[in-house]
Length: 282
Image 1 (cartoon, rainbow, N blue to C red):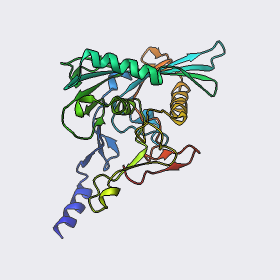
Image 2: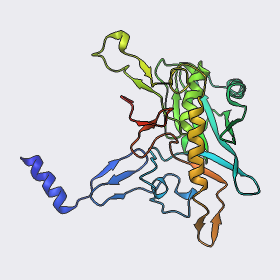
Image 3: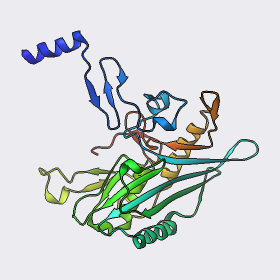
Image 4: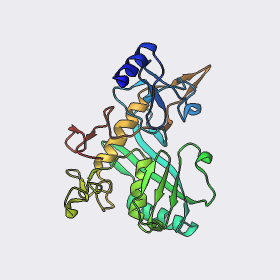
């Protein structure tokens, strides 16, 4: 009875009731975000409380962090090339300049060649740099940080930082987590914490058609659907036109991006046939 009365009092008095949404707090009572966006200084032409570029129907922004998109056009203003880039600093157990050099070579061998999709050349460029003292507060536009640990746990990314376990011995794992920085989602369902399941079923299960993809399995392959999602997302940004910032204009040919590129506003993913679906379990 008291809980119901308190809820009624809360609603009637319109007391702020913010809820944490990853990079900012949202007050459903007044329908407003209560925090300045983490990257507000990069977008002077928009409200510092802006969310998903004022497109909540078509976009989702879960962590407020970023990577860079560079757009190349021909003389007729058609998009002919796209470059998606980020710098990833590594530090901790197993991290070194030699490890960064190894990662850069391995990344170039697997993803260094540009791909032509729908007449557009796409280049993916992640530059790994060893820096043992870099802090998350030091990170600039399109910079991210992975901390290596000797512990045997599961690697993860949150915002523009992440943890890589087993001293970073698996380059594939490092690339997988780095692609999260680039806006890609996991393409598997996770049942590892379901202790009620038989032990053999406490595992991860790739989404349909992603059993041979780096975001869904132990493969190094980056499927074309990821490139197609990057293209669609970049075209949307490029078509928004120049953003007015006081007496100046931001020329929309290089962007700092902060959104997932493969989900809609409901957090749904798209399969290779273009159908939207929600993963069974994240």
